[in-house]
Image 1 (cartoon, protein in one colour):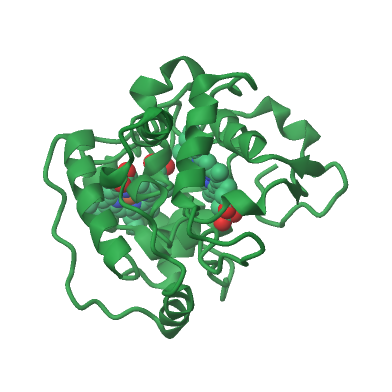
Image 2 (cartoon, protein in one colour):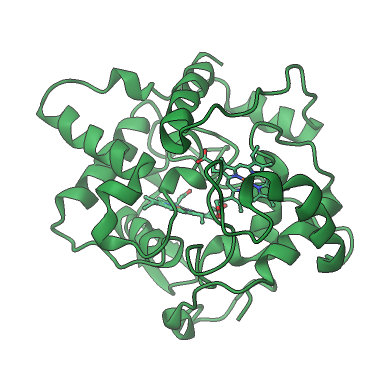
Length: 284
Ligand code: HEC
Ligand code: HEC
């Protein structure tokens, strides 16, 4: 997985840049569950995204680079459009190159696409703006925005080796199945022992990690505010550098605890799932 190794290196330097401290070492030789191994083996031939280090130096490269900067440093480059302390890369890990968390690789060709939450076909720019409004508690970038076009250019560039009509097997966050109803009281304990070290005892974030609840976190209308989505993200990626180490129950319990804490509202939620089909873990 050459692409991934490079992504890892890029991510590491980014993380150091972003949080100003050295992240914990990754656990070598950590076994991955069979399901994940299968997912990864299926993606091997196609999942070869270019490293951001190889963004071309021409005019198009300038736009791609701006898109990359919007993703990894949304706080600075997107600051007039956001209302919390997050960057895209905090959830779309490794600048969108990590296949375990809603990777940007290969998704360009999948749009426009019908979305049940919105109740109509959306473009890639619509989908990006959904994350600006919901995950970043911000506002949609205007259709003629250079910055919006830059994010699209970056995602297109990451998607260039992936043929149209491909199914993109690594798409989204690998979903966990819930074995029993999540228990937020147990989750509080998981948070204290496995998460607060980086995210803070009050969940408001530290120098090492972004907030997971409170006024500077994602809104109730974000995908991450769904317990099933957060549990799946946590299982595969948290603690950062130790993905796949918490049990499925711990992932669900801590997700239920985190998502039971206060966070910004998303008033537009009243218009969601206009044709029905709202998933059971949507908190409204
Ligand atoms: C070693 C430090 C560390 C630990 C421990 C840790 N995280 Fe994280 N977490 C991070 C970092 C760093 C990010 C942002 C990743 C990036 O930008 O690459 C993050 C991102 C997140 C996010 C998405 C962004 C956000 O802030 O909403 C969630 C949710 C999350 N972590 C939950 C958890 C949970 C739950 C645990 C405990 C099981 C946990 N984390 C343990 C460092 C950590
Ligand atoms: C709080 C976490 C979070 C943040 C921050 C965030 N996103 Fe997302 N994003 C998600 C989740 C969760 C999904 C849906 C994943 C799934 O369905 O498995 C998603 C989906 C997407 C998709 C669609 C992916 C696909 O497969 O079609 C795009 C594009 C996207 N986000 C762009 C962005 C951009 C650009 C930013 C920064 C401006 C951003 N996101 C910030 C959590 C986040």
